[in-house]
Length: 185
Image (cartoon, rainbow, N blue to C red; front, side, top):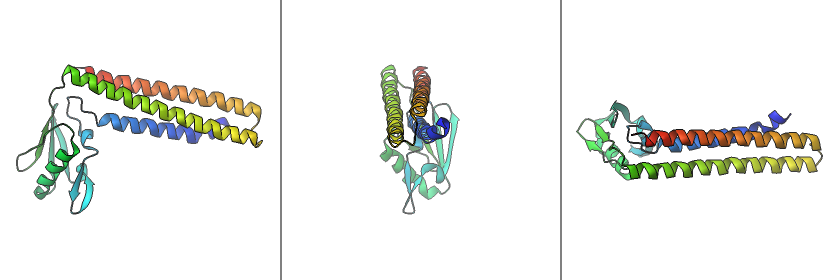
């Protein structure tokens, strides 16, 4: 009973973690990461298109991304889209492809990125706690309308708290792993 009742809230908590992970992927860590371009959109014949759909993105070296468009006419548009996205790296156009060279992060930049990750993880924890609150309010309404017994309510409350605690631990673990990745020189 309780597992089935908690499933929608568990799904929402999973989506929160997925969202946090995708935010983490957009953070530049000094190594080439194609995910940094996930939010970059290129004007492809009047349609805003993800950069990965107008060309090939390769990582030939640890600190280099190479974008080779399917059509050379797209080079200027891709270059402009990267500059507008303000990812902190200036693209270099060689006539056939665009190169993004990732500079080494300074110690100060690493600390700033770590703060950003802590902020993102804290936002994810708040979202998880809000989901728990929403669930508990829904279960209280069910208890008031006699759709849920007092014992069932107590069981659900306990399981909801355990679920929330597990997600909070997972968020902390993922944030610490990302911070460790950033702080590693």
